[in-house]
Amino acid sequence: MKPLILISNDDGINAKGLHALVGMLSPLGNLFVVAPDRARSGASCSITSGYPIKQTLVKSEDGLTMYTCTGTPVDCVKLALDQMLGRQPDLIVGGINHGNNATINIHYSGTVGIAIEGTLHGIPSIAYSLDNQSADADFAPLTSYIRRLTSLVLEKGLPFGSCLNVNFPSAQAFAGTRICRMAYSSWIDEYTLCNHPHGEHYYWLGGECINDEPDESDTDSWALERDFIAITPIKVDATDFELKDMLGNWDL
Image 1 (cartoon, rainbow, N blue to C red):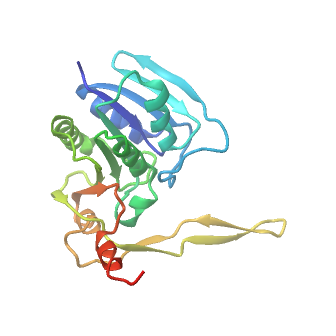
Image 2 (cartoon, rainbow, N blue to C red):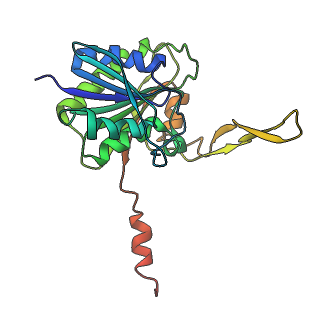
């Protein structure tokens, strides 16, 4: 039986990165896609609870089924696992995101949220991102790397509670692959104040992400800046064990 791979993204059903990923993974198994009906960047692990969500069939052919969903990326995964798939998938993949999800952006990313949700269900999961926000970004250079890593995860699995966050530099050729930790970074000038013609103010989110550890060579940011593919293992257990031990010595 061919592996069953569940795919979603946070750029929406029409994003070039999603369709590029489908083409890359189609030789590896049967693909089941459930993607948001519009861009949901920054959705992280959010879910929809205040109103119902809907799904609509977009394509059904041998080896590929595609749905769009009115919810968040994690809604897409939850709905697929609970209501749409006949069995548990062998792998869950998020992406390919238009724009990197390195450093602290791991915590904002809907693409990474997809992988985290899969991990919470005990399913090996990967998030793929390209450091290029253009709607017409070139994903072709990623093909062989994504196929190889995805094949290895299908073969070997991942430890319980862990997933992979993979970021590609925007380059035609890569310097290699680095296994990295998340860099600490800071967002500055995050909002732009705008004046409404009727006298009110509103704000557009933007800003710039600054690497707070530019000289540390073991981070995802360092790797991307030098055209390396950055692979960052993530654990969903958010327990701070060092602080846990420290608190044990407090008089609480």
